[in-house]
Image 1 (spheres, helix red, strand yellow):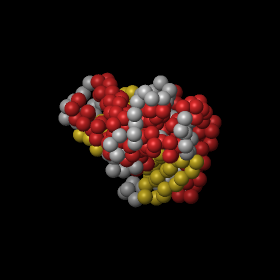
Image 2: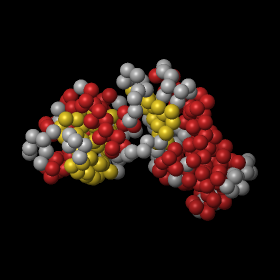
Image 3: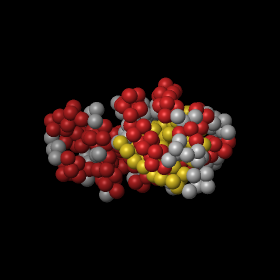
Image 4: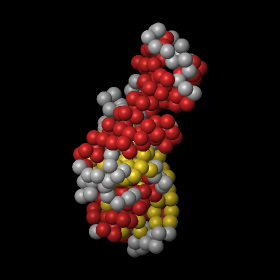
Length: 308
C-alpha cells in the first residue's frame, strides 16, 4: 500500500454495490462492483462482509490504504436510523478509514449534497421517501418506513391501487375500460378470486405489487380516467411528503430533486408532482439529478474534505 491520498464514493443498494475512487486532481483511479446489501434487512454481519468484499480488493488492486483516504462517502440502502449509521461507520472504521474522513448516509439522501443548502429530495420507485437538508445542515426524513403503513405514492402504492380498481370493475362497483383489459392480459388474473389469491401470496413482496404501476401509466396515457385518478392520488401523497418535510425545515427557497424510477420515467406523475410543488412552495427549483448516486457520493466526499 502506498501513501497516496484519494477520495471514494459508494452507492450500495440491496442488490448491487458500487465504488468509485478518484485522485486529488479528479482523475478516476477505478470503478468497482460487487454484491450489495441493506443494513436494516441483511444485518450487520452480512453487511460487514459485503462492504469489505467491495472495498478491500479494490484498494488492494489500486495499491491504496484506507488510512490515506482524504474523504469517503458511503451512500447505502438501509441506513434508516442513527443506530444503522453508527453500525455502518464502525464497519468502515474497522477497515482502517479515519472517522473524520467518513460520511455515512441513506443512498437517497446523497442527492441533498449536489447544491447549496437548503435541498430536498423526493424519491418514488418501488417504495417512496423524502429527505430534506436545511441551511444548518440538519437532515429531516418523512416516510419510507414500511410499505404497509408508508411508501405512499410509490410503485407499490400505484400497483395496489391498480389491483383495487380492477377488483372494483370485476365486482361491478366501477369501470376501468382500458386499465382492466390491460391488467388481465398482463397478469392473467381475470377473477376476484385469482386477484385475492395473488395479493395474499405477494403482499409482502412489494416489487410483485409495484410491477402493476406500469399498467396504470399505460392506461392513463390512453385516457383511462380511473388510471388518471390513481395518478392524482399518488401525486397528492408525494406532495404531502414534500410539504411535510419542507415544513420541518422551516425555510423558503428549496432545491427539489426528483428521483426514483416513477418520477424519472412516469411523466404523468412527475408533471402532477411538479405542479403541486410549484404551487405550494416559494422559490422552489425542481430538477432530476443529472448524475448518478455513485457520482453524487464521490462529489460529497470531495466537498466534505474541503469544508473540514
